[in-house]
Length: 187
Length: 251
Image 1 (spheres, chains in turn yellow, blue):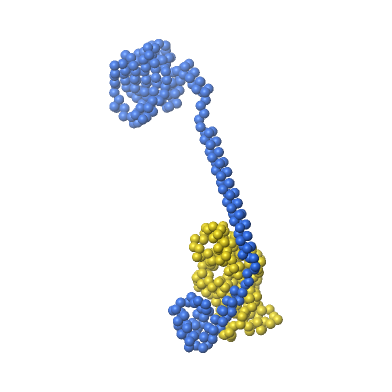
Image 2 (cartoon, rainbow over the protein chains, first blue to last red):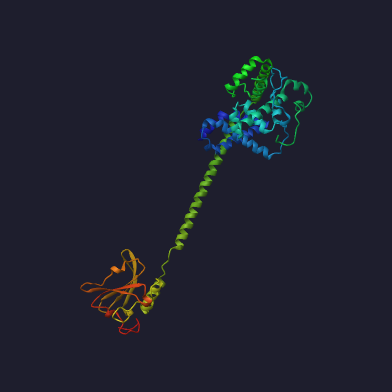
């Protein structure tokens, strides 16, 4: 694919990639770096892209691999162990959910392990199918469904208005279904 | 569908485009139509999904990101092109080196004619043709002397020796020693190995007006070889030594 093709790729996908990167990393600077590195890597691997229709999934996969490579090199950050979180929807939930503060969402995402964060981002943000997510992460589709259910339950527990009220002036993370924080990056 | 199953599927249901399939969604929707509790949970889940989806997408893209990406990619492409060029140049240099080394090796392994050796060989052949012929025969794993022709009981006179070489006969190289008499007649001694290369039974004595061929089976040190004497003139006498003391006898 010529450079014209690459420019088309950038135009078509750079916003989605940046947003994905932002939700993965939590900062604008890291997201921009990751997006740049993704296209930089894509240049040298353009020959691998045999199906242009799959370009988006291909770029997302490159981005995720780069992100994983980075976080492996960094000190593991604290994440919430999802074993402590149930996966059933809360019955006390309000039927009319008010808007969620994107900053609070990001804070909750940052506390999730990548193996749960990636599917939830792809699920909501880019509306990837279960199958697409499974392909992205090299996981069985059942595992993806399970992780999504648990991550959703965790986000509900963190983002429900009741918790916001309860957590007013307190640490939201501790108020959100009281998940314990651990030092290990793997839940 | 029971409430428990409905709750299970509600966790997996995508509220913007369902992937569960009609075999699940139809009974699920039927259940939600009659179960107020599950229906309320469904509405809450949908509401949460919409709110989460909206918040998830609320990421503003920095101004100028597109231009920075284009600049980054252009720089990267330049680097890749340079690397490709370096690789190609490296490959070319390596190929040239290989060719050079190959040519050098070929040049060094080619045989180099040595004029001194040629002179030395000729000198030896001139000074002692019998010794020279003997060494040549031995070098080719042949008896280092020629047998005395039958009925003559005298050896060849090496002062009449002209040459020893290989001659192509029926596509095979056959050693031959050549003599020339003072009268100008020529005698050739062909040496055939009895190793099945030739069908030597077909060889017979032949004669033209002034040329003859005689066959002799080797004996003693010449066993295993067949000698064929081809000569001009009346017989082999002019090519043989006068005495039976060896090839160095004079004519």
